[in-house]
Image (cartoon, rainbow, N blue to C red; front, side, top):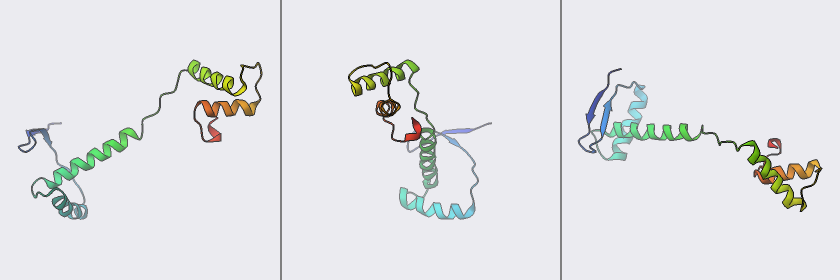
Length: 115
């Protein structure tokens, strides 16, 4: 795909000239708002599109990141430390209710289903 690259006179940034199709009613709604918001006639729509794309990109890149899981050994050690704090020792057997409480506390879990 061939792109037209140019240097913006105002910001001195490299920009790419693209052709985008939008519905006419959307164009008629956005253009007056963009002119009023950015205070310029020429380039207001481009600035509005840039802002919209930045917001879209931020929403879609941060919303889909997954918290990395701790290695199994680290998760095990976190639960054992919490059991030791709860019972003042590391017992051979642990009641299930105490174990679940320690898991929720060690990983800051609010929902019962996550245990």
